[in-house]
Length: 268
Ligand SMILES: NC(=O)c1ccc[n+]([C@@H]2O[C@H](COP(=O)([O-])OP(=O)(O)OC[C@H]3O[C@@H](n4cnc5c(N)ncnc54)[C@H](OP(=O)(O)O)[C@@H]3O)[C@@H](O)[C@H]2O)c1
Image (tube, helix red, strand yellow):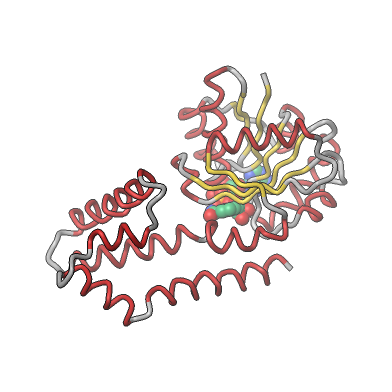
């Protein structure tokens, strides 16, 4: 049995530990972790059988795969502390904006390293994850292991590190745009007299159901699915025309491009 250890058991570390633990039903993975936040550790212990570690060093010593899931400003101190214990391990970092080169430097190049970029739907097993397998120290078996692990718990794509800002702008930040959109639809519901609870429930189902419809018809472009709702002379086409008059499509594209510019600044 292999051991997956996470240093940092917050939103993203916790989500990945839970994902790995679920794969462990076949007896493949044991999950361990350290976080100074005892409530986070206790929750994971109850939800996915996490074995708590005393500190960062114990996690690194006991794990075969070591996930760094702390805030970017803590990455350097954590890696410098555990570096002497990383020989023979596989290191994975999900800290946004901390480049592979810095991970390798802080960890004294003690073992192969992978940089990943998940998004928050990972917390319910519905995430997307970019995997950067650029480290020449990675062998084929390690690349296969990372790909299998993250493909089993998310929609995973392998990207060069130089493409991470593009992924980050569209998919990493994407939940912020989608929730902004959800808020807008709920407010429209309130304007139409729905209770907040009803509007929230109906709007969430609207988005989920529309995505499921698209996924159930992979050969049909989104534009065709939209036209199916827009009867000639009807009410839906009036609303769609208003979205176009207000430039909503262009605004969404501009929002993603602005996010991309900032992601590039932060990664340089
Ligand atoms: N949220 C996203 O959309 C997203 C997407 C992609 C990547 N990321 C990356 O994921 C990382 C974690 O983000 P998050 O949202 O999961 O943050 P989070 O919920 O705050 O989790 C980080 C956890 O690490 C703990 N911690 C701090 N120092 C530690 C140490 N030395 N050893 C072990 N644990 C330590 C923190 O405890 P305290 O609170 O007590 O300090 C906290 O519980 C960040 O680097 C972020 O860039 C996030």
